[in-house]
Picture 1 (cartoon, one colour):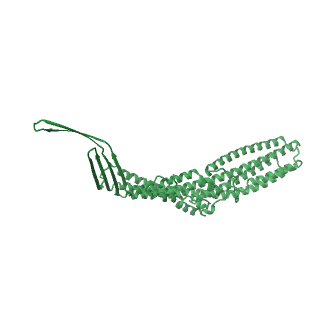
Picture 2 (cartoon, one colour):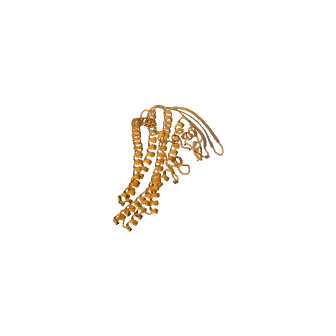
Picture 3 (tube, helix red, strand yellow):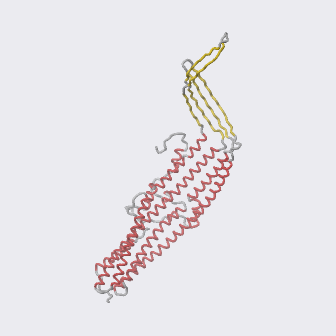
Length: 480
């Protein structure tokens, strides 16, 4: 059997060269600068910030929470009620009298009245053990906790958006790599069959090329499935269909430069820690509210009422005006109030433990993200060297195969090693960007302001100030 240089067509060599270039292009760095002609990661983050339903639902929940403050402030204000009554009354009377002759005389009368009245009552709480003041402060603390929770949701949505973008970018590059690999394997199979026809290789070489081509097509199907799944996840998270995605850059510049500093910043500024701190304030004020139920209550009440009773012959009027001050001192209410105080103290202790848990969780997340980021950096260097070496090896194996020093299987293995190296490089670059966003989220810096995204920022203070001191009205500030 002749293994040699004899049969390499010009067309085949050109196709191999083009396929190799295509593999390099498909595996190009995901970290390269983007262009304005396609979707960028920053644009995708803006779309998620504006359109994500989870984030918009949390904003609505915070607006609902804002209403707890005017509800608590209503305890400072008087309660005024107006009453009016009208009705019909029938009166029948029978009286008995004795005449001068000792004869009983019965006299009967019947009348119909239309009684009606109008009254107004105003009641003002003067003292209730500072319950109103503490309820107002508690409502404000709950609003602050809600804002921290909104910040957590914003970070989660932005991180999910960055991950979805990079997942789709990675799977798109891998799909392109696998398709190019199939093109190369098809050309390899064609050449192997041509060489078999002239007796340079055996049937075994042809079977090996066919097997590797079938495996490559199966990898394309897997890559297509992953791409479709990532595209659906992109649509769900970003809120719009994906277009052509441009490469993205990591955001290391916004994160602390040492692990120790990252841990300190995360434990202090992560919004989940802030939410836990406000949870302590809410629980502490609940203790004071429950203790206020044991204090005396002082209320003042003013009332006025005008009554009328009319029939065909008479009209009676009556005017009542009352001013009262009431002091109520609780003595014993079944013990329930004491139980509420003890329960709220246990809740306060739980919230303090939750704060320690939140800080520990943030620290663990920071350390984990830091480790993933460092590993991704090292992996990019390693896989870049692997790609360069695999390219050199593939070219060398192909040349050696032309002179009969390598088999078809050697060429196929070298080709597969290059594809695997390219996939590993693309995956490492994906991990590099995602890990940088994860670290920034862990230290509490993943926000529209922190990233400098060009979009209007949702300000929760706007709605809060619009409703805080409103005394009445059914419409929301947005007109609903």
